[in-house]
Length: 406
Ligand code: C5P
Picture 1 (cartoon, helix red, strand yellow):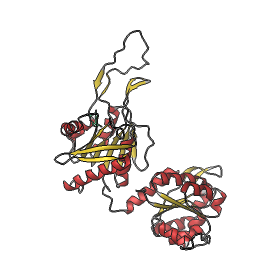
Picture 2 (spheres, protein in one colour):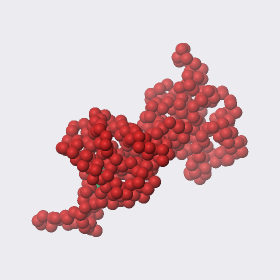
Picture 3 (cartoon, helix red, strand yellow):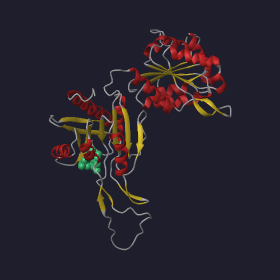
Picture 4 (cartoon, helix red, strand yellow):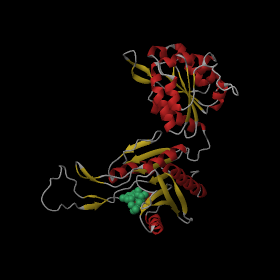
């Protein structure tokens, strides 16, 4: 949702302005193109140069600093903006916005912005509670601005109170949700999707386990792609990768934990993607104490793990089930076998022996198999791009079978 979005971060003069560097970084990481405008007071807390280097664009501080004669800079920035985030928003800037005052770069650009606006108030609790500030915030709300609730915690004044700026990650999530709420053309709005990721770990004793080479990258990219298509996403992950923003994350370790976490949401899910590399076996006895070295061989007896995808295949009613097949040979034959045996709707096969595909890589090359459909070959691309392709193909099939309107 934030990928390719033109986001302007408006920084005003509160102590929380130091967090705006991280906020700009997080928006860029989410794929946004970021510009920054700041008030003179904000430059007392963080330099324009810091934000210029991070955003890789000029930072606007002075309305009359017209560097480009071919345009009127403040109107140009306002027109460019697809999402305005005012963070931190001081009581002063909030008051100006509520009353149409334009006497510095931030308030002037904001008066001309027509894109969605997210205001992140951050100030002393008494300033926040002041009826004037409250009235201004309610007024801005009535104009259609989104106001983020300040956090409660330790304030710069040295006491606990309400008024802290929420963490940058929470602001990015709120921005994402604001954009999702306003778009009606995303195909997965109102749809629930569960994605599994990573290689499960099966305990041998308290310090040892059985696992595999899966990094979780494919599953995490699918969760992000589903989020960007408007879905309500639950990511059940056994991976240590950073958790994506805007999705509900359930961290698990073993196959049985993964199964419990996924089945809890299965009834209400519309799509399930099993991108995890689930261990087929687990040690039959998991020792309570570290197993000591003895002379001679050690045998570990393994017992079968539940097949999560196959269980879902038996229990499904409306859910569209997507599985993965990591193969080193006879890819088509094995993938088609899995489609049938597990009663899945789609199997995404990759040849993990190929250089640009499979475990731990940032790219993949896959073949999509579906019931009664020609196989689709997707050439080498980033896992993020492949994730979107897989979901768009699933959406197409679901639309053809009238599964998305239910
Ligand atoms: O049978 P195989 O492991 O090759 O099948 C791969 C697909 O089945 C993947 O989507 C994987 O997540 C899923 N699977 C599962 N439970 C298992 C083993 C695999 O859900 N125990």
